[in-house]
Length: 194
Figure 1 (cartoon, rainbow, N blue to C red):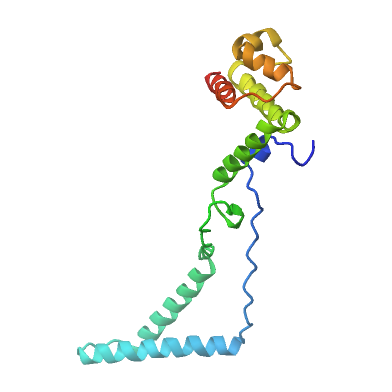
Figure 2 (figure 1 turned 30 degrees about the vertical axis):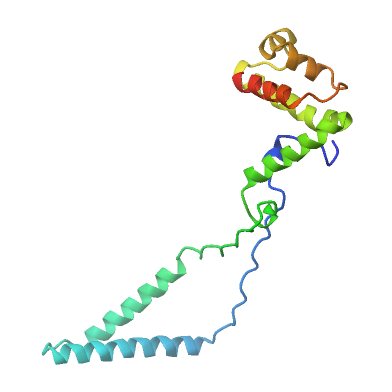
C-alpha cells in the first residue's frame, strides 16, 4: 500500500502524533535545608498552638503538641509521595478548526480527511480506485463479517444478495468512473443497513 492508501487504522488515527511533555528540571535540594525547613515549620506551628491554648486558659504538655505536629508533618510527607501526578497542561485550542495537529478532535480530523479524499476522487477515477474504493471494500467485508459471518470472497452469492447489485458492481469493477455523491450516499446507507 502506498502512503496515500487509506485503511481503517488511517481513518481513525489522528493526523499528528502528540508531542510528549518534557519533564521539568528540578534543582537538587540539600538534605540539611530540607530538615531545617521542616523543623522550622513544626516549631512555628507549635508556638502558635501553645499561644492559642494559653490565651484560652488550657494547659497541654509541650511534648504532646510537638509530637502531634511531627506526626502530622510526617503524614503530609508520606501522602505527598503517593499523590496523583499533576494534570497535563491545557493546550490552547486553535482558532481555526483546520489546524487540528496541535490537539483537537481526532474524529473531526478523520472526517475532514475523508471529505478531502472524496472531493479529489470525484475528479480523478484513478485516485478513486486507489484511495476510496479499497477502503469501501474493506469496510464492506468487515461489516459482512461482523453481521453475517461472511466476506465477499468466502460467500460471493450471499454477499451479492446482501449488498445489492449497484454496490456489488462498484466493488467488482474498480476501473469505472467514480460514482456520484448520491450513489456514494446510497452505498453508505446499504452498509449501515447490513
